[in-house]
Image 1 (cartoon, rainbow, N blue to C red):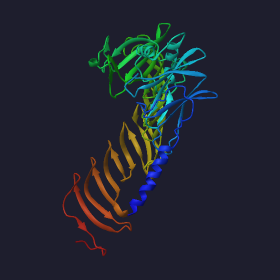
Image 2: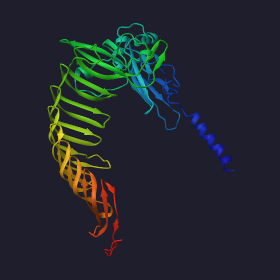
Image 3: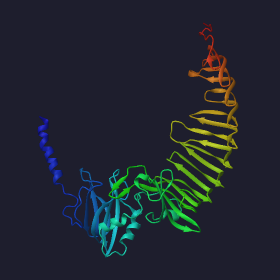
Image 4: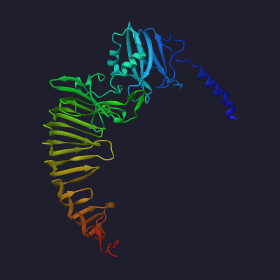
Length: 447
């Protein structure tokens, strides 16, 4: 049988795999080999090379798997490699090494999606403070020091705001103001049962204003390790405030809000009121940008939602004048046109083309008035309701004529085909078919 002759081949391949040299074999190691790492199942080897010690890792469970460089540690001795959880995500891998008679610690996170480690650079300032001036250092000492820093997901890289004092913050420092509950109530000494969803810290003080960062708890699992309860905290908002003890209070200066790692709002306040240029965004589906004057939108603004863009002017927080609409996304429909506003209401001509069909007419106080051409036909509106004689588009190129009263068909409806031949007559009362329906033959006779 075929499977019998295949057995020696399979055994041979297995033997080749088993006998294949590991990436660390016959190479001088700077630290005992670590196999089956808890966070990744990888094998980690620190290999002595001519230029110094380099760390390599590999999940070598397939023939095409290749070792990846963890880091270049230079002329160093690897003192300790250990794990510690700083948030409720997967634990962080730490490497303690000694270089030129000085201790250093690097931290790494493993990404299960791309199967790669990356250095946690946001944590580096805190690690440098721990190692500075130390003559003797070990993993338990580092863990004890790390347990005292801010609980935070240090892996994340936040979109830069362009405000240097914001972008250069060392989030592991600062003075704790308070924890807050889900409904922004202060929690002086929270327990896990108190559900500490937020906390706030101050970093600088300038002329009675405080540079604050508000952190919020990502909605994922909680991790309990001994007497430590860890959450996946991340940055929610960076701002200058005069009353930092309040969850939001006394905003005065630049402010940046984050949704995950992306900026969701950015601008400035003056004594709690928005001023100057502002931009907001959410989930790549909505954004707007423009200027504020004394807390009200003023001047040119651009709004985007679900692939559609609106450009126009606000005055005293109300839309005014000509607003251009466009949609150029690769979606099932494309819209272009304009609308006219007065004091925040649709007033004046409007024209929208959607999927090649144009609707055209005028509004008065947000209601369609007068003659309109729509995707369904042509006729008049009175207070946003179809009124009087209308010519309607029907299937297969047919045209229908009928009158409307308060938005409902009333009286005789006549249907003609694409050649202008009358095909049938119906009668309506308050939008409901009423009376006899007359169908017409090709000869023109009725029945």
